[in-house]
Amino acid sequence: MPDTDDIVISDQSDLIRVRQALRAQARSAGLGLVDETKLITAGSELARNILKYATGARGRLRAEQVAAGGRRGVRATFTDEGPGIEDVGAALTDGFSTGGGLGLGLPGARRLVDELTLTSAPGSGTTVVIEKWQR
Amino acid sequence: MTGGPVPVMQIGDTLLVSLQGDLDDTTVVRIEEHLTNEVARTGAGGMLIDVSGLSVVDSFIARVLTRMVAMVRLLGAQVAVVGIQPAVAITLVELGVPMGGLDTALNAEQGLALLARLRRADRRAG
Image (tube, rainbow over all chains, first blue to last red; front, side, top):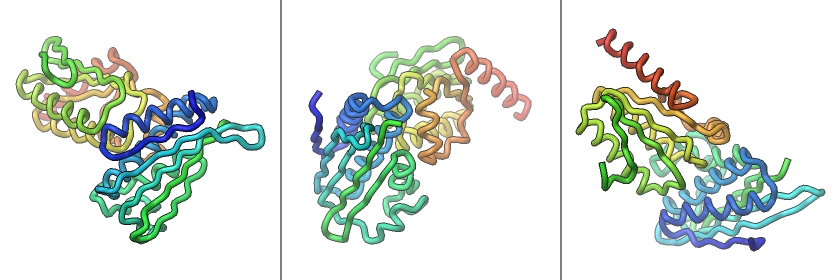
């Protein structure tokens, strides 16, 4: 099992590859089943966001092992070259959606992981980094 | 029934379905259509959906599942969803997916009992 997985996200069959990569990384890092499930679900939401909003511009996932202070974890970085997010604060708010969904994607994903950072600007794509650590 | 995205068993007028593996969005939507059609085709009065084989249920899968249950109810059948994995239940609640409209039970046996109760209540109300 390599320490890093790189996955292209360009159509919805890639969602399954994203989930598989995150599952493998979660097991490598020794995460428990609940944390593994949360990480995979958060990743599935973020990958779907890329398919929904960054249309035409493919996205990418890098999933890797991280360690700090004697604990291990998984870091997953989702990047796309889509239109970017105009109001990052609103995008992280429950119920906010420009895509006709429930608006749970980003805020929901944030609740499932230990750390979520979002970097984006209109026209310059979006990067979302999530981390899930061993307890 | 062959050719569908998921095998459906019929016992009496109850349909039994087991969802398994890693489902992509297209498959989830095909399952929704297939099961809704099967209820109409067979005239089933109840459907038991076992989701114990799903290790991940994200907001899309949850939303389609909820939508399908609403459709099947419109056709006059009751639905019980059974076997949600504890890790999946914890994740769905934290994710914030509204699933309160689903009738759920721990396992297939309790699910069948739940279906019988729902159908009795349905007959009384009707």
